[in-house]
Length: 138
Image 1 (cartoon, rainbow, N blue to C red):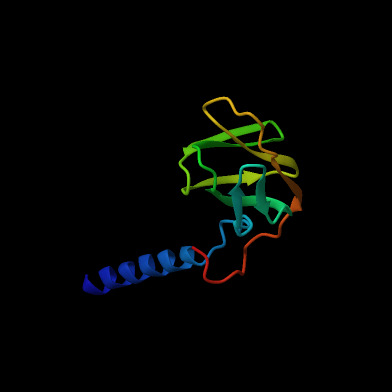
Image 2 (cartoon, rainbow, N blue to C red; image 1 turned 120 degrees about the vertical axis):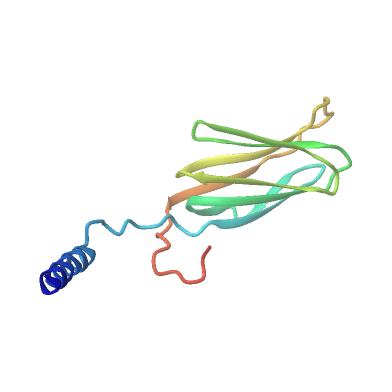
């Protein structure tokens, strides 16, 4: 009786272990590594660097170096995203996955401005390579 129970347990363990080794899923590529862009709002223009990059996830950190609260807008490819208001001397971060195309980063104000601030232009090219095999990523 004990011998039959032991054989049955051994058989069940063998079946369970055999099922664990199957490749029942595809190893899907991960998205590209997010790029961190920096920007500055000045009284006459917005600058963002780098201005040319490949499509994929980006983090744009913008510093307001003017004397007024500013609202930052990212526009292009049917996208219109607003962040703010950003206080003078403060920063804000826009996190987005950008498709190929041209985008503008604008800085506006809640009140009327005498002279508009020139926008920064981002040229987004082909998608960047995936992040498979990239070490030390979150």
